[in-house]
Length: 255
Picture 1: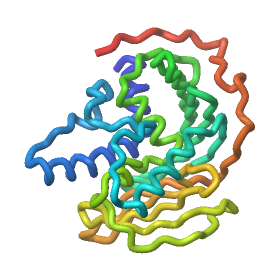
Picture 2 (picture 1 turned 90 degrees about the vertical axis):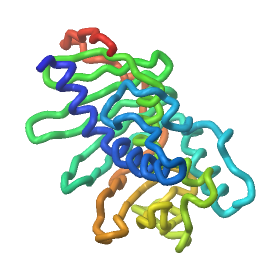
Picture 3 (picture 1 turned 120 degrees about the vertical axis):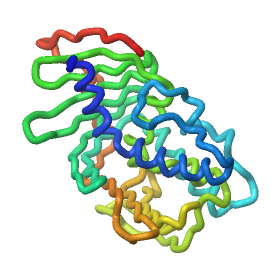
């Protein structure tokens, strides 16, 4: 297998929340439209039409102030100039440790495996991603869907903020103010369209999702958990996005 293919496989573990939450949206679309309108979630070159832009308020619906106020709060995260985060991702009985560095329109992600750490730098302006592990590196183009997914993972721990722009998709059962790791948050417990349970902590000051849990309705078992163990604002510099000088990055084709 070519190195870039291995990187693509590893990339899926960094953004596993994309696959999970896209699948949830896929079930919703199937129920509402009577057909499957989404591409294979493992295909990183799918059209951006399957996902609404996360930074746009155009899809925001009126008439549900309780829901829409949280949509506005979540969008505050996009106003942050820079932040660093250490996260734990649990999905499908697998636990991963992730790191995110965000500054402007650049996002760096790292994930530690059993043997080494893989890093990615996402340049959202150039629509390029640079991935490397050990002494091998690759440069790949990004689709609009990938850009959306990377933002979703970095800012909102994989949570679709479109949940809060579409009245009727979630029902809020519990809402209260509660600290999470020292950060004042809004805690929400909700039922989604499929009657699964969602538990979310949203930073009141920054709008980032500090913790996101998803429980299936049938078994009440936890299928997904993304939580921030460490979060700091304003400490990331441009130096963090310098590519390693000792790695030869290969430009990989787009399919």
